[in-house]
Length: 413
Image 1 (cartoon, rainbow, N blue to C red):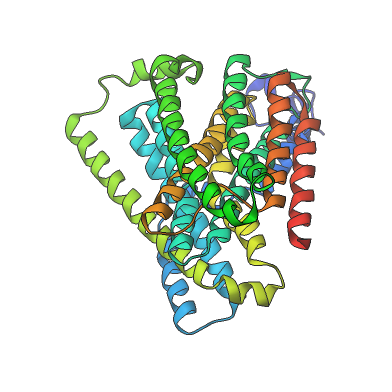
Image 2: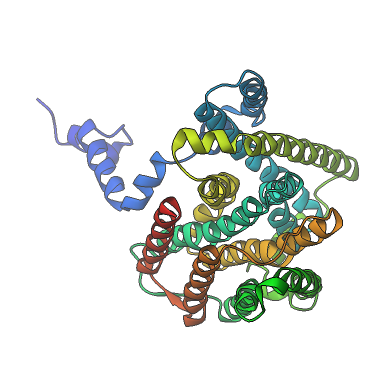
């Protein structure tokens, strides 16, 4: 027969009973919101198992790269070629992200964020250059549009949901949001102007005029991008710094030895260069197989460029931003996402136009009309949301709904 003290083990420091442990577990489970439960099921293996097992992140790439080469050499099924290269690009994007973050520790938060955003668009830049070399200008343009749409609709929508789920209406950093939204609108307008030019000039003169306009405007956009970097890294960097960045910098001063720092810097650069080279290899194989993949899957090459490639490229950055926004830090999410968009609109696309100019390829800012309208409307919606300054999870759901609708439209297009 149990005594009273046997039923109260806490008073004597004894282990709690099974019933008490079950009660405590039920209380802890009740405190976990549904999103946290769902999030646990969808963590990427590289974020959980590889880190917990302390396994090198490079081993999946070491397996996938030879498979990608064999798939091309022996003409494997197009679906296998697509899956192997897409998965390889996902892991390579993560490797680039990790190496960029390591370099960011040597460069500082702002320069590191810029570096991460630049190399975060490695796949888009590589696909664009390779498509230009192979005279596939519409494919290069579609990759750019798809990257912008996935950033501002898919990833940003998920960030808003994770940040504001089960919370009241939240607010953005007004100065940061308005500044970036204005630059975003300028990017959209410059890509909309060639469509307007096509409706004003005679057909016989339009191609040369739009080509000249695109090359001149690209130079202006590159200058604007330089001004944005000066604003971003120089005069107004306080708008882009997180609240605890200065404190963390002060804590880290003097902690690392110069020798260890140099070794870490060199190894990070080597890993970054290797990951970029492997990304170029996989992107080239994917680009060469797009025709077979399109026929096998029954989708257009434009759909592959707008949906598959951008999602694979932005997956690692997206997961990191979405996870960070879980704490309610949407300002960092806005900074990363809009900065990535500006990298595409103010640097990558104009840079591709200049490269096309150098290799005698007529790359212009005149995109497909449906793609241009879709991108402009998406940017307009996000711009309105940022300038409103307030958000709830329903706004993120609306962005995801818009992205899904556009994907369906591009599938039928």
